[in-house]
Length: 208
Image (cartoon, rainbow, N blue to C red; front, side, top):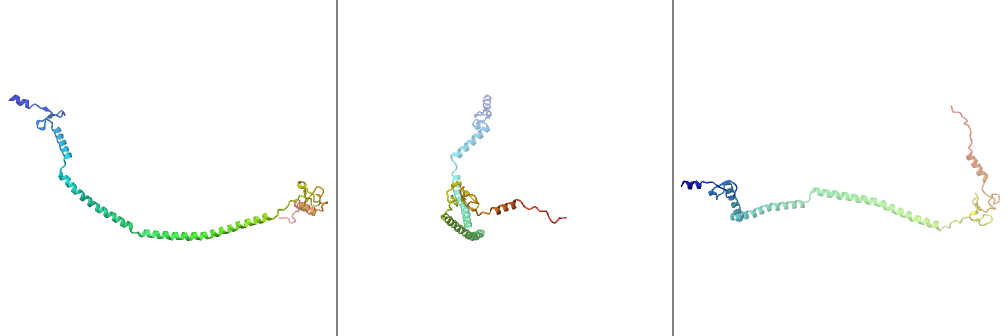
């Protein structure tokens, strides 16, 4: 009998191989491994078959919560839409001020447009007159260049001599004594001498 008790009291290691001593009451596992084993069983059972009471309670509570939460949300949306539809006095005043300012701008633009149109009409009339004057000038016959001698009516071309009296003469009649020139050479010479030689006279009164 003593030998049997000794054999039964020999400690045994944990069946999971953690290194601690196991107990036959805990299926040959130590206390730590046995607790972990029980937690795994409980978690696996809870995932596979959840209680029906919890499912029913959740299904009953969820619609009530949704309906309760949707009512204040709907009311808040209605309040926001009604407040947005009501015109504010500030916006009405701003619209009135903008309309008054736009009317003033329109009146000023009309006043400015009237003188601009008048200026445009005046400019158009001026431009219309200018072509008419140009046409009248073009219609006039251009003055023929004098290419004949005033005395003998001989063609001189580019070899003619223009006198100070304004006429063109040939090489024979170019001198003033030949064609009785009407230009006063003496008066012209006296005027040049008077300009080129001013009178130099001392002051009669001596300044003190």
